[in-house]
Length: 196
Image (cartoon, rainbow, N blue to C red):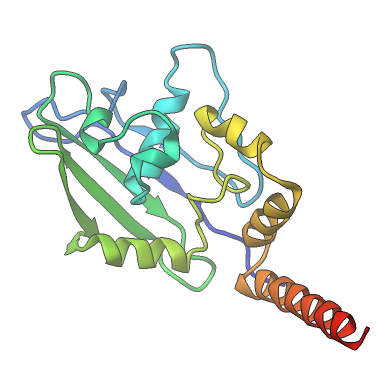
């Protein structure tokens, strides 16, 4: 049985301790959000910032803006009128691993980002490797489903939905086993058609 996917604790301070008003979307104060290892829903009244929180998680973990179905550029996730903003996420590493702090500083002026892992400068590739190591799949609608992408999930073909579910539930071996099985069935069909 693979270990539980870890997103605990997820601390998202969205207001920096700097004199400049660097903000992320609608938040002006730090928030503390602690999801569990299973299903997590973000609910609240209209205008409460649910989508901003989801955007912060995705953008903060290196997800492309296209995954959110809202904006095309990172600068569009900075509060209007602010020169920049930041998102910092603390990801639990599991029972034997320390938490990892991922920080993304966003510039609205030139649409760029800088990264830090555990306080040290990092590359986007290093952040992507950290996220992949924790088996966080921002591109998998069965694991991370922003509100604006619900229709995309509903449009998935059954075979694609099965593959995405396998990727979300297990480690890479589950999907690999399914691919091997499908290939074996295809080879068997081909062999039967040649023999006939």
